Image 1 (tube, rainbow, N blue to C red):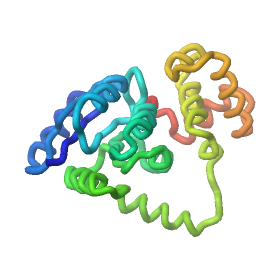
Image 2 (cartoon, helix red, strand yellow):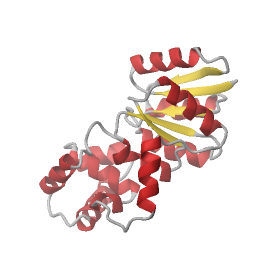
Image 3 (cartoon, rainbow, N blue to C red):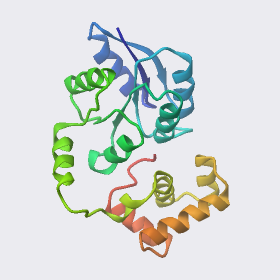
Length: 213
């Protein structure tokens, strides 16, 4: 029996996932979490084989949960199920340790297939993303500026772009305000931007602020 842990803050999504998995004879939901902190607590408290994780969670982001679970339980696969397009987030999540990435537009059959693959030790991406990644392997580097940012710098970029103050960002990421200011300076330098207004404009253009990580 494949034991599944679900972390998503939307009750409708959780109920839908439970209904889908409930129709599969060898899968069962062993826990649910509605916040990032609950997801970490559940991951430590229950026996599970795969976590289905949303990126946009209260308290702690899904990205932070992914990093923590990957550090604490590196053998456990985490499957990202997100509203964010693959082009924007899949590469970064896979590099951070995710075992797979699906959008919430995926059909139930694809979700079941992804769960089976990651539990068996594989990595799951959609056929379209796999084809794109394969093409890029043979193409010369041509990345957008934000793709050169570290994971933490990318988080700071997105939080600035959503209008959060340095103090709010510091609280959200458990950092000091001084450290947040340092990250901001690095982001602006790496992206050749001068002000928050330019950063916000860039984030909107590249669709980086649909919800929060």
